[in-house]
Length: 267
Length: 319
Image (cartoon, rainbow over all chains, first blue to last red; front, side, top):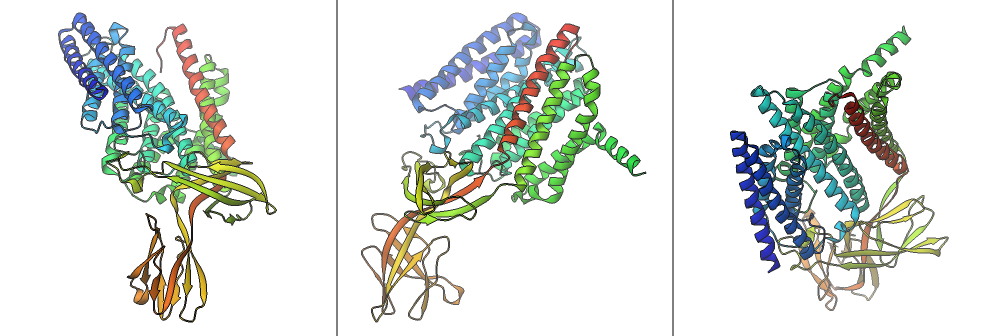
């Protein structure tokens, strides 16, 4: 019964995200604030169902729902959409949804193909440190997804010779700052957890190495803006490179490089 | 001449023209390194040198900019930048210090036996090793051999001058920490230690301990035998192999209730106990790493807050 409810919530949330994205596209094409506003409301509805699904999963699994690949991906999608809704409070930011909502939608699609079985929490996964590691890393990833979407918005508006693409350039920078801070915390707490379980802070496992590479790119982005005064186009391209590195760290490494990190692909 | 050369080197290393390409080079090398399955590349001298150069460049850039920053308007935000960079430097220093200090031993503990670790102020006795496995229905899609145990508790007594000093429990994820010394059981190095009792044709009895991580060669009659692991089920059993001509071939299975007869000698299974691998180490660099992290994160938060506030006051945009 609860399992079916969870699945229904998952499907309903994904469906509403899809509808919201289509409306975002329409609102964007027509330049209609009313349609975009409706899209945001639909997205809110989807997100509430999504949060309900995650909560139900938590109740059923009796552990924080971030440990299996399915839980991890759906939690990440929830944070991405949540980040957008935070920005969408201001009407002028809502174009971001055109590029950010599909990130959440793709994550839900990815999760749809994963096993939804609940497995007991491994004894070594118990404790706050690992949960803090996963949460901060996911917050860092979600914040960089905002940087990515804002950079695409910037590039598009710049091409259209829009008056104010700088708004998205600013948004990209601010989100990048949070992404860097959270990813830093995520890497440090992950290393500390590894030390408590395996007796070693760092293994140079491909997942760790690529997290480090992604962190270096985030750092390069902030330095390029700060010291080399990169703005607009160049910064946006670097942000997209950072997002590509993030996607590779998150998905590519699982399928292309042998590793010990995470119990299943997608973690 | 020498001073002028040093000044030039300082200026070069303290310049962003060097720091940024170094960062790009470090990223590129790390990407290439990740494609190789062996992470030995990351401990090679040239990779560590590259990391060291990056750290040095960071240090010099920071030093060079401190006086100018302190004079600048809106320095609050820049103090955050300096603090973050100092944090990274402290972290690098901690990592380097950790590489040259402290100790690490990988030992095996057998239930009921005392192990002496060189340099440690106490000996370690493993009183009991409690192990509970996951069931197949818990993880139907996983190979249970690859999973950590559901419960893996090493009950330890530490002895000083042969007398019990304190008792503690260590488990993966929950190491025992005694006066800064960490005792961490290994997740995958655990199994069974056992003894063989060999009675030869004239009734002489010999007890042979079998440590699976260093299995002994046993001479029985004219044969050289080896057994390396004990399979525990309802009846514990150990398979024996000959190792003549460099080829291992099975000669039989010894069971708890069924001795093995080879060339007139009978082999019985004696004492059986669990063993676990354990890492015994310390981390003198830990406080340095913790302070590095605190400085780095505090600097980031500080910078973001003041930068945002100052720019808002000035009516300007962020970087």
